[in-house]
Length: 287
Image (cartoon, rainbow, N blue to C red; front, side, top):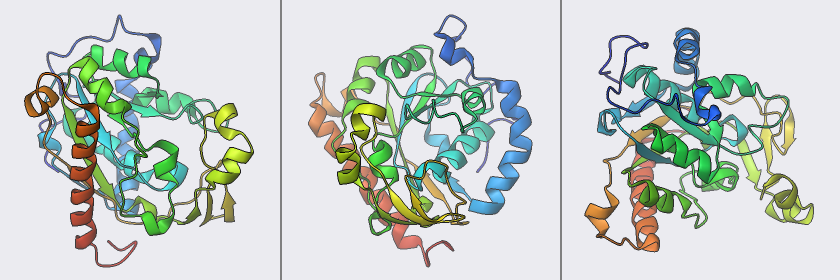
C-alpha cells in the first residue's frame, strides 16, 4: 500500500474546501488525534486482520467523492476500521474524510462516540452526507447498513444493499463520482446465524431505534450473542479490500441517469469483484 504522503500529518488533498464554515459535526474531526492514534492503532489492526487494501490510488487525490462500500462483521465492522486507517495512512490525516454510521452507533452510551467523531465518523443522514461532500470531503457510505452487516455467515460473499438507492441520489445531487470499495473477510470474524428481522419487526425496533434486525451470532466472549449491542471479540480473519475505478454518473449514464440502472450497475460490479476476491481465499479466517 504505497502512499502519496511520507507523513501521516501531511496534506493529502490540497485544494479541497475548508470545513471551517461547515456544520459543527464536521468540525469535530481532529487530524492531530488521528495522527497520534494511528501510531498504535494501525500496528494492532495490521497484526490482527492483516489488511490488504488495494487500489487506493484510484481514489481522486482531492475534491469530493462518494466511496460506496459493502461491509461485514456485525457491530465490530473490521473492514470499515481497516479501510479508514488505511485511507488516512495513504492520503494523510489533513484530507477531509468522513464515514457515515448508523444513528444507534452515534448515540449509544457504551460506545466512545467522541473518539469516532474525531476520526470523522458522523451520523448517516442525507443532510450530514451532503454537507460533507459540499465541504470537499471524501465520504464513505455503506448502503447495506444493519441489514448487510448482520447477514448470516452463509451470505458472507454477497453484496446486500436491500434495494437502498439513496447513495445514487446523493451522488447525483452533489455531482460527485462514486468509487466502489469492496471488502471480504469481515463475515468470518464470528458465526452469524440470523438477522432476526422478524423479531425486530415484532418488537418495533425500526420505529424506536431505526433497526430492522435483531441479529443472533456465536461470538467471543459471549457465546450466544443476541443483538451484538456490546460488540464482540472478532476472530483474526484476513481483511482484503479492493477499490475500483471512479464512476462519473453523467459521463457513463447520460445527462439524466436512471437511478435504478445506476444502482444495478454498481451493485453488479461490486458483486463480481467480491466473487473474484472470494475465489482467491483458501480457507476461512486464514484468507
